[in-house]
Image 1 (cartoon, rainbow, N blue to C red):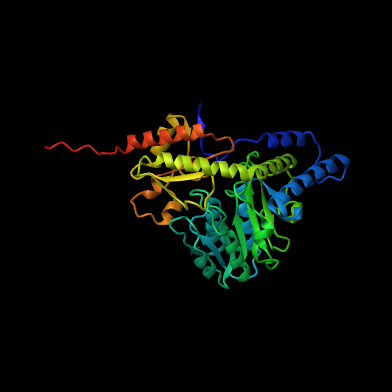
Image 2 (image 1 turned 30 degrees about the horizontal axis):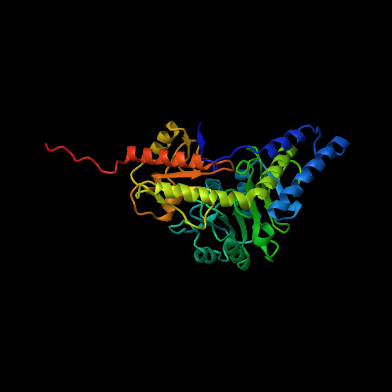
Length: 394
């Protein structure tokens, strides 16, 4: 039996989401149509919007359904940039997901956006003081991760939002990795910020919480100024054109409600499993846990394995029946050096290529964690024996 510990890349479909998706497909009607069938679809769509909004802590009208986290991030950053009132700078922390990095790079290339970088520390945290200092009068948009998708470190999202509000800069938070793992409360994070400043946009994705791939949402504050990416109709406040995916929205809402309902218990169980896994891996003192040891996603274990290329570890683990990753799954199936680990400033040569990420799901068991730990230790011993053999004298 294979042990799957790559739930941060995608997790198993929840039965609640599957059932909601199938039920919604029994409704034949375009939610933009005025006839009875269309209005049946509209009611199902708006019910999903209300249910998701209740979980995220926002008004239903602020929920814009998308095709996933990547589209949500693109819409937020490009949309805020193009609708900006001032400045030409995008405040960009170093350890962001490629959906953010690549969007900003394209705006820099094609639309002359100016990037103001913000460093992260050795625990993977965004430097809050540097972030606040970067919010100058030239800052048009700022963005940040709620939780780092690779090393699992939680950022001070509330502090970042307050800094953006004080500087009158619109902020986008990428909550894709955090949603369903920790409490995400849009209204609470937004506070009493001005209508178009502070936290104004927040991205979530469905397949990270047990909804089908291809589902997601962007929460957009009522007063935010945002230019759409797509044109051809004006549903969803004119922010996303196209016929809305009723079944996808229903499945996303069902998964979100189920994930939030079990979040506290699951987080405690994952934290215990994480401690069990880390303790077992401590049998080899060379293996190090990266990221904040406490303020992190409960089911994330991100390891530095000196001298062991990540792709080699993945090959040996896969042969042993363990699925893991080296980091983000959004690089076309090709392992590459972790830009997050590089930004964290590890001194060891080639450290960004010598990492491994193990992430747990709602059904992960202690036996699976034990098996994975044994496989990691065995693979690492094959790649890096405890004592290197002496070379023969010539």
